[in-house]
Image 1 (cartoon, rainbow, N blue to C red):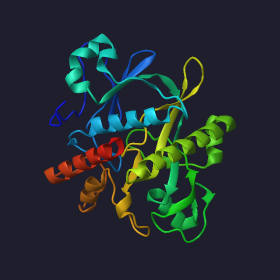
Image 2 (spheres, helix red, strand yellow):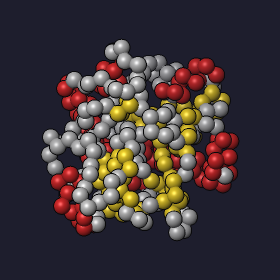
Image 3 (cartoon, rainbow, N blue to C red):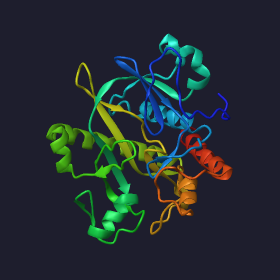
Image 4 (cartoon, helix red, strand yellow):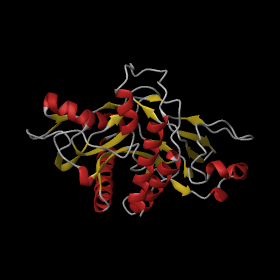
Length: 297
């Protein structure tokens, strides 16, 4: 598939219209879903008008890589990434679907985002400065911005509706939402997944500062399953290890070019978004591809 093919949205003749998230188009096939990862990019929960060449393929391939590397920790929802295994109606669209799609099990998704933080950054850093806590978890004093925690912490969030922000919640609030046993299970599994990925990425020169997992339960067995995406630059903070220096924000393998550009403008972070210049688009595309190459080399 050519990197020049920028896929902003999909609509396939003879197939019901998909549900659209910020990045993914999801086709409901009854007991299965077909997830297509587009080249859309969002910042501050606003979808930009321009796409990032190759981004959807990168995200899909990174998720596939991690699903394969962690299936001994927990089962995941992947059935196939081979278009020939998809329902027949999709076969003639293989030029669009190749590399950026996966057929998955449908599950009952849990209503929480399972966030694991190994470093203090983003909203965690902001909260820590104010209260020396993250999501109600008390932390030692003296931690620097981007500083590494002695042990990773589980800091869940509520799932926000499209255009809204996820909201950090405490473990006790998670128990209220999904029950004590399930809350303990997703905490344990999330931290195990993060530690596995962090170790693999570290050897390749990438620090995974934090990440977000989503889980669902199997419609028939009730088994807990890893769903959605896994450890991508969209759901995680990826930092180049050789440039890491606590005490400041870090360079990253994701939307840094887009965020930096938007920060330089007088934009109120509400739609419509400003147009992205070609150098921001190409720079962002290269960063995503670099992350995939480093991880899967």
